[in-house]
Length: 386
Image 1: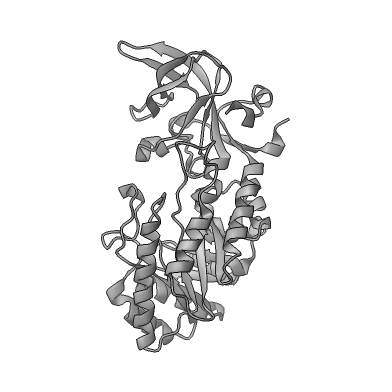
Image 2: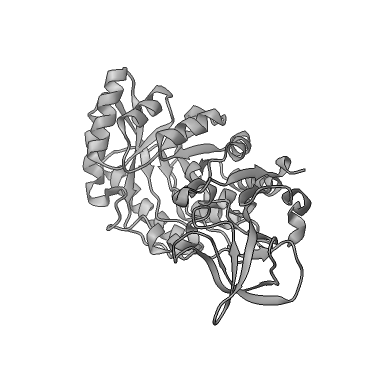
């Protein structure tokens, strides 16, 4: 759908670059707020690891979402973008002392703690600061998700979280610490999940854990179910945003929240993926022995997901309408894995044509590297293009 791109404005810009449709982003945020707002106990945070472009963060913070951070740098980015400190949660399996200090000094809402050694360090640093840190324990629920093996996080074999068998002992330990306030439980089973049954299974596991804790008179103030909601990479025009209603309704129906509890979500990909596209230019059309290659000036350094996960992104020639041809779309990096797609049909391509690699707003610009001494891609929003 070429009409969604300001192509004339693109022609004067140096490729490759990321383009973010802020109108779609604002529509997505409005839908999230409407659907989550139907449930009084629901709170939504944006997972900054999906995309930390400052202009996008500013829009998201102004929509009232909290922030889910996994590094000290992300905490700084969230604060700079205007996210309320009391809506910032900090997760991650390996928090450095300086990162913990940033969280404590800024009195963020909560640390999502993943091990006893981490808990002990947070208590020690909070004590030295004369402060009390709110913590939630990330529990590994051993719930599988129907997604790529590299982005499942809720199985017993994964590095994340505290085993369920250790949950009570860890909570009891925290209750004895003077500079720790046990706040709640945190879960995250994976990413790019499209089967609501996976979230239903998580709800059932959480219900069991809450009953177990109640039998021991342990009160849980907050439940954080992470994120994981996927997007439709194959049909970004037809499905520009996920079914947020079905997502939130699944938790409303199956999770048995207690009075006074709040339920927290950490949506990343679902917020920003569809608003972003990687715009690249055709360098050459090469006739191989058995196939045609479209060689573009973007590579795996700009968008690593296809090389890393064999991920699919819809690719469009946004310059030229013509007879369809079958191509492999590849980049200039000196690696055989620098391939965006194989044997796909595109409008006939020519040197200089602009190509849009769609649904690239999440885990695109943020994961870019300078391998081969390449420059990092710039990121532009709708308001930047004249």
